[in-house]
Length: 118
Image (tube, one colour):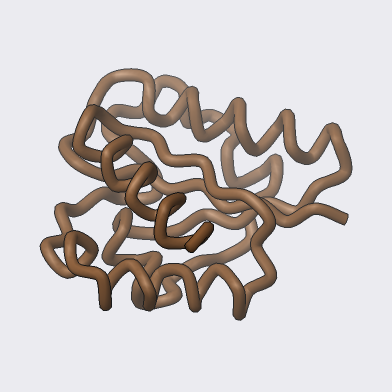
């Protein structure tokens, strides 16, 4: 069974909760386990994640912000911070990570991918 995690980071933006809901529902339909990471990359580094199910994402489309919380994380910009993030993903046996956010969030995801591969 695949295990994926989803996080939101940077500033809150419209559509974050619907995106979380879509990730969770699609993953569960495929038989995957889904974990929500609270407070973005800071939560990833700290290992702040919990399973998400259908009930967790029911009725969130109308709510503003993000149910997972969001933060900016200067520590993630360092190699040591990214290494800690990768360690958390390995320890939790996470196969994939969905990052919801803007340009900075995607730049962080790209840096994490590079660090993970090397």
